[in-house]
Length: 518
View 1 (cartoon, rainbow, N blue to C red):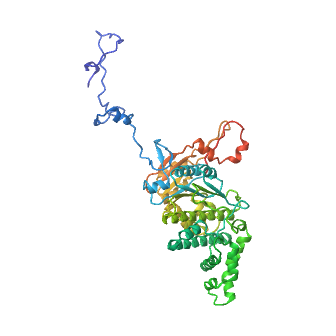
View 2: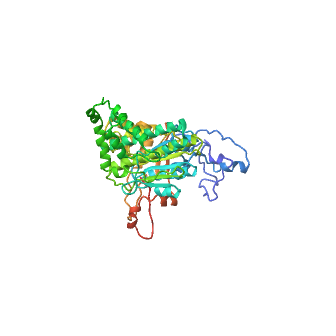
């Protein structure tokens, strides 16, 4: 045991009182060992290896002070926000992580989250950042609209679809037909065949929506033969219309009759085509006729820096027209992408990359049975088309609400094939189900579940934001998730005002409080 009076460096306090038993001398108090006292509460520590020492100039070592270390957050792509724990800047988007960083093998993003937590705000930031790099954003079916003002600010094209504001001719080959004629030769013939497939897929989707069930296989053969016949008989420079298709089926040319196996009997032919005939008449005379039975009001401009198909004029309750308009927008937009790449392959135009946004995915999924097949056919080959995409919906229950097991499995495949999965606030049960698909840890499930909590009661009546607004978890394969916090700028807030309808209820002066969308 060592005492303080045995330590040569020890000096007693100057105000030490004199001892009653003899001359002044320091009290014999124990001196703590260098590593602390042993035993419980003693604070003893283990030996530490001395740190390595390095010599460097102030120019070389200035970045080390105050010993900051990077968090390993990805820095390739659009700046998204700050890491929730380290504060480091996190960058990323499906295009950059596929082409430059090679983090993902499919340039696609699937986003889930409860309404009002900022899903479309984050995608809106990706649109702005990608447009600055030369990527062309395509918003194919803007329901709010959430992106129209941004596209206008980027100098892009906004096309309105709805009753009385604009329509889409689903039989119009559009940009793909024009590109096929311009290219010519074998490449033009191949593109023309692809055009036929897209038109067939779109008409079949409309029939599926009207019937609320998928078409039969022989009806697709009849429809394909009728479209071939109609295209061959239509004069150059004019696109056929749905009434022309109905007329061909009613007349029954030899090419169409051959696929029905009517064997020259009128009755057998009518029995084969009458259900399809009635469905097409239902499109013309029903809620879809005004929008899809006439000429295309505005074609997509291949040279536009951004495109938005605005379908916000369609009422919320008009589910059939909404689903049909979204599918028509997707078909027209993706056909434009294919035409652009075909022209680039032929050396006629520069190569351009595209980023599509498929928002409110649950709306067309619930419109009719079999729609999942149509969406899957439109979007499965985006990687080979030089196309990135973002699909946005609320929860996995949107897929569970589909009518058949096959449709539910295919809808879940959208999440499984996505290169990036971004999750906003979701209830715990939803996160548990999602964890079976993307591999979430227990801590990640608890973190995202906490973001779905409602806001607190504001003491002064001010608007209280939900705790999860602007917070997202980015998952890529089996990697640990990256939690981020997004803070929007004043410019983004102005372009992405999702509360415009409430502006009249706010004071004329004061805070113009605008939150995140979805």
